[in-house]
Each structure stands twice: as structure tokens, then as C-alpha cells.
Length: 297
Image 1 (tube, rainbow, N blue to C red):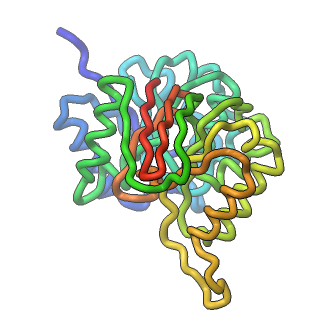
Image 2 (image 1 turned 60 degrees about the horizontal axis):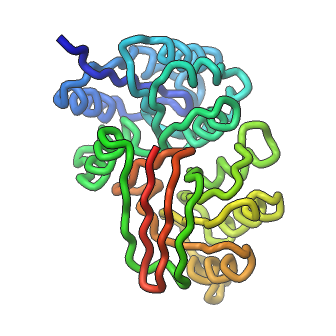
């Protein structure tokens, strides 16, 4: 009899603040025939973190070593991975032959694992906020299973493009604040000819612009073939912006960066999100009326 696929939940960043959501995520995967590994330590807290730095590293390593786990999924984000990036055994993670998935602060792990060990992970839903939601997004669910069952997916977006073109490259990215934070460190991969996707939450357009210009001035964006903007939600404009908004920021980027910039990727701190392979291969086909992204592991 074939072994059930296994999913292990980890909390390498902030403490788990929604135990009910975690329980719903456990039920979801069990109902889909999966074995679920959810250690009791997931709900422990040390200050704002899901345990001490040492405990979170040990839990991640322990999950990587388990033979009954095929997918390792973050329960939530929140700050914390930056404290432990230098303590993680990336060779162990890469050799485990598991699929690691999450977004937000988990971008730090995906980026570092790809930079240090060539591990292709997944920017995508998490156990608590997504599979543990009271009403799971059908869009998120569909694209998660499409990626994990077929190893490839695609999305068509209306609008968000001002020029036609067809570009191929390495697909990578995630939370913009984490990527900017890792610039100049050994935990940001030196991707050349890439398609970089970014998203963030609670960041005014000028802060988004500032972080992207940091990547530009550091030479990172010059090495990419395109920039793909995902969801940037829950920010507030101010009266003194005087017309400076997200669209104005994007227009400035298009004039400044020297690479195509498209908007509207369904990914980020939003209910509907794709599952994107960090380090996969993708083709971006853009027209003036919209664009299409096809990607695979």
C-alpha cells in the first residue's frame, strides 16, 4: 500500500496567533488524504517569535530530516527569519528532497536556500492565513494543487502592461521588504536574466519605490529581464502626496529601470494568490492590453 503524502508545518518566524486557523489547516490536508505533522511546539512563544532562535532552527532541521514529510509549509510569517539565516543548514534542506512553501517573512528562507544551496522552493499560501482561513480561496486552492500535481501553471492578467514582448527567464522573488533587506548579503541569489516578482503590505508607494530603487542602485534589477508587481495592499495615501500614487510610482519605474514592468500579479498578502516556484523557469508574454505568465519547476 502506497504511503500517504505528508505535509509538515513549521513556524520559523512569528508566533502562531491563530490556533483555530492552524487546526482548520490540519483538518484540510487530512481530509485530502495527507498525513499531517504539526508538532505541539508550533504554538509556543518566545517574545514575539514562535520559540527561541535555536528552537526554530532545530524545528526546521527536524522537519527536513523526517522521511514521512514531502512538503514543508510555513504556518505564518511575521519577523524572525532574519535572526536565524546564518544558523540554517541549507545543504540539509536541499538534500531532503522536500518542497518548501510560504510567503511574507518566509521569503527570507526561500531566497537564502536558493542562494546557498540551489534549492527551488515555492512562494505561495501558508497554513494559517490561507488553508486555515474560515473561507479558503478557491483560486488559491486551485493554483496550489495545479502546481504541486503538475509542476507547472499559468495566469493571464488583464491590463498591467504598456508594451508587447516575450521574455523567458528564471522566476524568483517574494516579499519586497525582505528582498531589499537581503541585498548585499550572501542570502540573496545573484540571478541573471530573471523575472523578478515582488509584493508587500502596509507600504506606501514611495516606500515601494524606495526599496525597488535600492535594488536598482545595487545592480540587481539591471540583471533582470522583467519586474512583475504583485499585490501591494493596505496602505494609505496622504494629502501631501498631491497625485503621487501607486500608478505614478509605476510610471516612474518604467521610465527609470530600463526593463519591462508589469502589474497585477495575483500574489501577496491577499486572499487570492498563486503558488510560484522560486527558481523555476517562466515565460512572460506581454501585450498592451494585458499579459500572460507561464511557469514551471
